[in-house]
Amino acid sequence: MPILVMKFGGTSVATLDRIRRAAKRVGVEVSKGYDVIVIVSAMAGETNKLVGFVNETSPLYDAREYDAIVSSGENVTAGLMALTLQEMDVPARSWQGWQVPVKTNSAHSSARIEDIPTDNIMAKFGEGMRVAVVAGFQGVSPEGRITTLGRGGSDTTAVAFAAAFGAERCDIYTDVDGVYTTDPRIASKARKLDKIAFEEMLELASLGAKVLQTRSVELAMRYKVKLRVLSSFEEQSDDAGTLVCDEEEVMENRPVSGIAYSRDEAKMTLVSVADRPGIAAAIFGPLAESGVNVDMIIQNIAEEGRTDMTFSCPVDQVKRAEKALNDAKTAGHINFHDLIADTDVAKVSAVGIGMRSQSGVAAKMFKTLSDEGINIKVIATSEIKISVLIDRKYMELAVQALHDAFELEKAA
Ligand code: ADP
Ligand code: ASP
Ligand code: MG
Image 1 (cartoon, protein in one colour):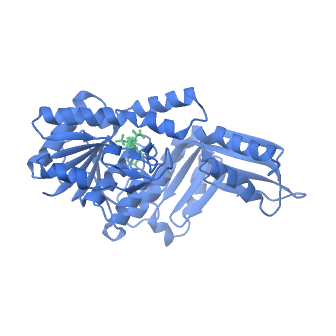
Image 2 (cartoon, rainbow, N blue to C red; image 1 turned 180 degrees about the vertical axis):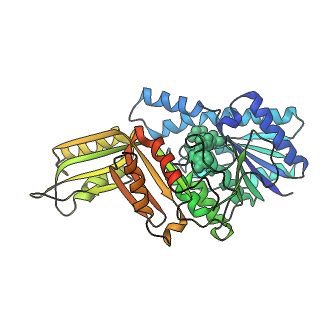
Image 3 (spheres, rainbow, N blue to C red; image 1 turned 60 degrees about the vertical axis):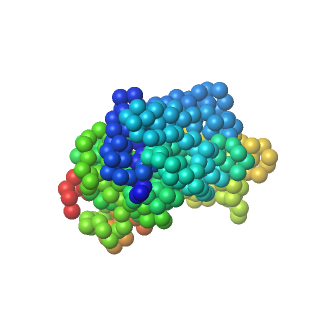
């Protein structure tokens, strides 16, 4: 029988009632003749609560225990979804990541899936089971420890299962009815897209649009998974939602097709470091080893052999970064006068494949922000994106102003 993957995010399984509603939707696909793999997230708010417990217990925690704790939310919803389906007379059972097993590397809290053997689940489908409910977000390391795939990782579980099982489609059910030109919760003028190119979706996701985890888009692109984002709250037709697909299939052609933001950024400045060969390696080596995800970097001009080095990273990694840099200083590997952390910044980005062939996008972006009186702290660009770091209090204003300036509310 053809296989379908259906993933339900946290808000879509937030209550028993919503789980029932999701299960009904699964039942409809089963009655159409599909064997279904359902991937579930933890109930809304549950993972945040667990992360809070970890941070309160141990600020510089052991990531293996972090994974053991935060992966548990998905176990509950997987079991509840299986029970709900059984109550509806749909043959179903739950699987935790290690039972499948979802084999990952050992990069705890941001592990990568390396292999998903299909034999266990296929054998059950062969015996008449119609739905395999799999706890998203989790895997097992070569050492046999529980791993997690990073926040939003159930999207990646879903796409990886679709690829491994050759599913006809991977449907991501969430609390919005598709991918929009920007987060519809921030800009009321955001417009739903019928289709979006993999590359644009990849860039939007990596710049903060959490509707899909970045890695899930990467996998869908690589394994040609038919990936769709749609609402779990509305009745859906077969062409509902947003299809993530190849560039050639997307009709819109404009310089900017979406605005993304990332709220929880920090800007860190090392004041007066020696300007010598190897200094960047001496700073960013220890940061990488401590698991700090450095994003933007600027090195200021040197004066009398000393310079300031600024970089950005997620705000919840500031403590880790400070420790790594202070340890490197104590060990005599680097020398700086001061380490300043600005934890009230956000990143706002304009994304579009059309930027490759159209100039003036950066100028327009900077002018728009300047007209709103928003100061730009750091700039980064690539072929299809421009990102700026600004004070967090202006983030929503910046998103709305840029959405207006690039006229994204209008179809191209
Ligand atoms: P789930 O719990 O279903 O995984 P998420 O909260 O992870 O859902 O992702 C859905 C959310 O992504 C939406 O509620 C919306 O606020 C946010 N979002 C950010 N950018 C976009 C965008 N461009 N299009 C749609 N949703 C977006
Ligand atoms: N529950 C996990 C999280 O909140 C994984 C997911 O929902 O995708 O990040
Ligand atoms: Mg999500």
